[in-house]
Amino acid sequence: MTDTLSQAPASTSARIVTEIPGPRSRELHERRVKTVSAGVAATFPIYAAHAHDAIIEDVDGNRFIDFTGGIGVMTVGHTNDAVVAAVADQASKVTHTLFAVAGYEPYIAVCELLAKHTPGNFAKKSVLVNSGAEAVENAVKIARKHTGRTEVAVLHHGYHGRTNLTSAMNYNMHPYGTGFGPLAGSVHHAPNSSPFHDGLSGAEAAERTITFLEKRVGATQIACLVVEPIQGEGGFIVPAEGYLQALVDWCHANGIVYVSDEVQSGMARTGAYFASEHFGIEPDLVTSAKGIGGGMPIAAVTGRAEIMDASHPGGLGGTFGGNPVSSAAVVAVFSEVEKRGLLNEAKRVEKTLKPALLDLQKKHPVIADVRGVGAMLAIEFMDPATGKPAPEAAKAVQTHALHAGVLILTAGTFGNVLRFLPPVVITDEQLHEAVTVMDDALSSL
Image 1: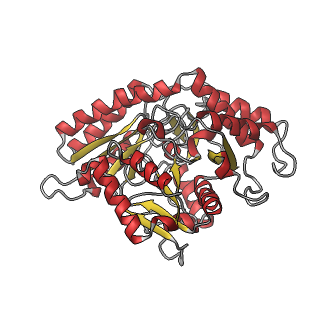
Image 2: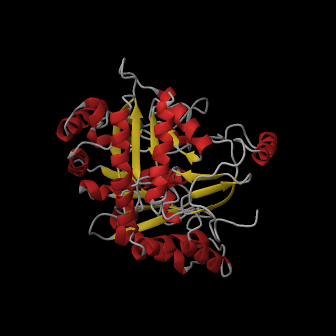
Image 3: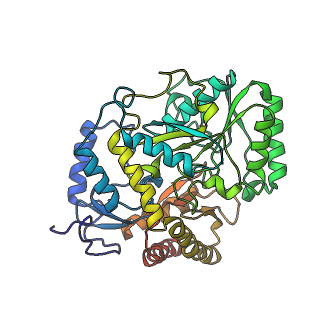
């Protein structure tokens, strides 16, 4: 194959030319099984060769419309030209020193951009790390140091990572914590707001959450409340109006650090730089990762300067945190969002995709709910006869879509949600093509 997507895409549509998986993917999978831990999942039986914008081409020449975005990473598109150029330029200068040993400008530039674009008009500082889970762990460390308290509060159906502490913070113990214990203690799970499921107003849901934490834990014991403004793995649950603000107010009234986990919902994914903006809240700390790096590994904790400065020198950081090449990619991502109007592109994705999904819901009763914001949308499946979750429907659509050239991820506590995280540069034609594939899948159920 002579053409590569990063240079000159021959097609912007799905194209299946072999059985799935194809022969080269099968060969690679045989090699994988021999040397890669079985603990690393293989969601799709394909292996990527090239990718650009919203198209992934596998090693057999099959092309897929990507509705996964690397689980929310490729917001600006695969192999974005500006990101690729920034990475190449920085790699030719400095690839590593350890920022604590010999600093470099890109790290500082990233912290400046995060201070500017995270919610809140107050002095902010950041620490750069490697992954979303590491950012969440550091946010907890910082909150504990600042408050002198030990307890951590999280919400039902939340997801925060696969490390020891973040596994304990997840709602789903399986598969993230199964057999890996004992996990970190002092983590308390409170009811969340899920309007489709609980029917509560924001005020009612907040009262339930707060009452649980006050009675079960005690507000004076809690160092931080960690909340995804839109829950990711939980099924793209958007809280009721007023819910998050009530939690912020309660935290501030009780000396609790409010942490907004924006690892999946942040960096232009929802049509705002950070999803917290949709709810009018100003978190004390914000964790970011995934989309900020445009495909390069990097994450951050950003927040009120007085909280971020609670740590003693040497208490935060790490060997690769804020790596100069990854930091250069972040600067390029922020520039692309500004220059190409990608906040509006995320809104365009919602404007195009959400009505199409609502039309699917009218046609197929197994779709119980359509929800989300920007380019972070989902559909939930329930058996219309019993009202119970229908994960088999979600899986069937995912499998059909794979063989038709569309990659979609499942989500939700019961695995009955399909979540859509396409690059915001995806075209309307690609969106409609993917919806047609889902319609065909649902019609064949």
